[in-house]
Length: 438
Image (tube, one colour):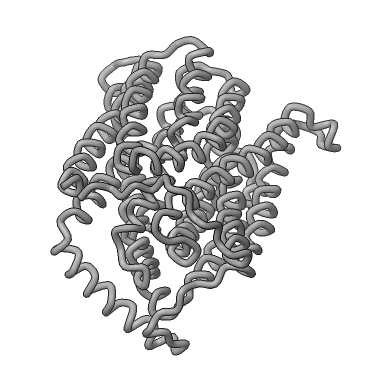
């Protein structure tokens, strides 16, 4: 099947619908502060230098990978079950709110963890990741309540674009705060980082409110407020969906491909700063490169939505995966600071686009009335992938180190292993969608 032409101008949606679209997209603005300031930015640096001070960098990298993986396993187990239950009870917004509360509280509490206590920091970070990832199950599912048909690619991309902008703006303020703590009445950069963790919690909570107030979710024909009926019906529906999924070859192949390639994307997001520190780059350069990724990512995500309309989401996703494959190989051999900046800019060009178009591509394949359930499966595979990626990167590094190689060589071998995920995921995606070309 050839993807339909989607570049014809469509009539603008009504005012209430536009408000709902913007409110939905602003949740990406809200929780992306966690992805930038905490997950990709300050937590890996603080975890290595403050909470794991004096530990071999290869060991701290493995610890960080393990924390990400355990949080991913928890979300992966819960996501499809919660999605099925939420569809039965039309409770996507309520579940999103619960996970957002968990994430914001855990993130703000990171500010209080004393130095050297890597276990407590890891626990709170894991809870924050659980809140972030769990909330995204229901945020993604609400896409079908605010968009349909050919608007999905652009609206999904709008969410990612606002995420890059909002997350980047708060991160820029946090970076300035750590560079000039006295200007904010703070005594040190360490205190500024702690205040930054608290600011993420407040930002995330505040900008979640528009979605909760303005987005109306689609009602399930089996809607009920009885908790017992919701749980039993949701679990029964999940079993039926898993049985039906076996009959949908294209959808199964797509999910398998997504499982592999989104792992590579998420692993680079979560482990890039740690990798840069392990091979000798200064934390200031790494943070500046992250900011570059954010602000390149804002227009690039919108541009990928346009590109998906022009050439089709399939071709645009394959293009993005090809770029990621090249980046992961190049990253294993870089030595100069300017190379890290170039790689950060290139990643910013494709990161949001691959994520946004994968989400909208999948949304077009599934029944809207079961969107939370199907997005539960989608996010389950994404989080199980996050189990694989950081462990793969950390495990390869430990194996190479155990063989007598230097810490630098071990870290480079770890990042090179991520290329396998893009190659395998891209090949499966091409195979899964080839039959849709007709």
